Length: 328
Image (cartoon, rainbow, N blue to C red; front, side, top):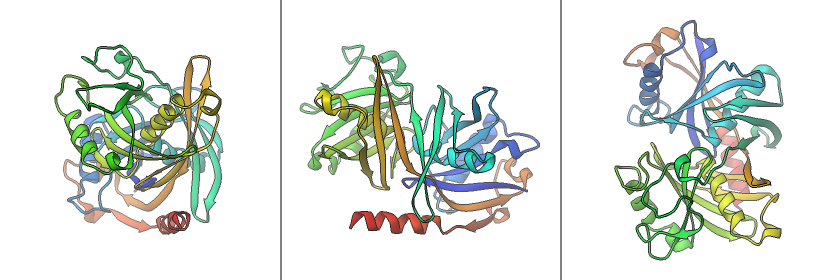
């Protein structure tokens, strides 16, 4: 029998699989099949999820493990900030470490255990990098520029400005009013740019950010491969970077920001070193349930969820109570 988890960061929900437990690790097609079935909300197994987080051994000497992210549609994501926090917590508890690095597709990223936000509300900080504005790194085409930073794009909207940034997964960010944030604009643009289109051939995460005050943003994201999500860690990080870049320089960086979202909130801090940037993302890493299943079941083309043993935790209740208290 092996152990899995149902986890969330800011209600961005995942199943977590540690492949180092397996006698025979799953192949990529098997992982995609597992991700699609586990996350499918129609099966009603723990209400589905936004993706599958896969942990394996890393060959990098400074990394405690390797993380892969598989979206609900079976596509692989290069990075997931909310997911990395939950993977970081898992590895911290497995290896009794509080500071380490995790290998991702683009870079080895720093993870630090933070003081608990409340009883049974664990918090973890993670590095979001590398960051690029180059068209080839997103990629994007037909926008008349090699870098799109706080610029108007009439093809998207006549009035709003947009920034395209890879963190390292691709994001399109716009700072907007409350009226635009709560309109159908995000659904319309997000859906258009995540089906065949002349601008983002691989699709793009689209986020709208409302500036609440000088230290507070609210962000909604239409996530590539997922659709609307309660929270997108890299999206909130990218929005924080765009916010910092559009503020007076003396107020832009090294400040702790609060970023709220439909699933709760995170804290971010934007750092600049010479001409490069990285974002520190701090938020909850909640284990919703512990799951036990025979390894052989994971290799089957069709899962029998009746063979999965589930033990719920009290952590999500604690998180919800914490968020409700913060909102009052």
